[in-house]
Image (cartoon, rainbow, N blue to C red; front, side):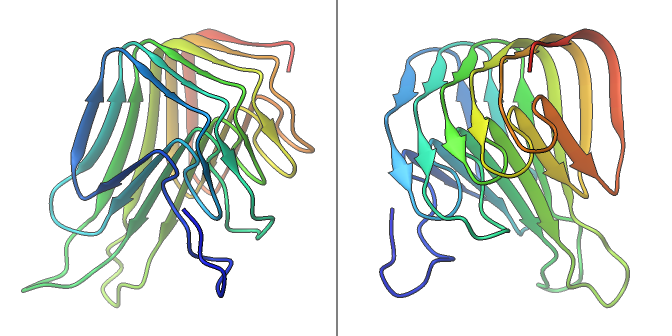
Length: 193
């Protein structure tokens, strides 16, 4: 997935999820590449329905995002939500849910394993949501040149009640990087990043 004229295009090297729902329980998404966001899986939400990517098994491995643009990321999985209009304003949501499986060996400028970001263009203060929930599985050996080797989420929430984040590399936040929201951890492990 690449655009030779614009470095902010080229999303979803392996899979592109546009306002939809993906449930991954097995198989592999591997060795894909894109220019801007979502080397393995790109998730985009702009409508009233919640966009979902849920992984309970299988692996997302050795995918890559090539751009060094500051808003690029998500070597394994990327999530982006934007406020939009139809008959009325609404909250757009993207939920990344990891209950099992493996996200490993992926590379990006931000968010080597998982990347989340939202853009609010609402005049009414209606803010979109990117929620990352981890209750199982492993996020390991991912690399970010900038922030968030394992997970990067800017303006979105992270909840961790299980699973393992280990041996990821970044300049800041080897395991997890987040800002402007909340990271809640009740179980699981973040180790050796």
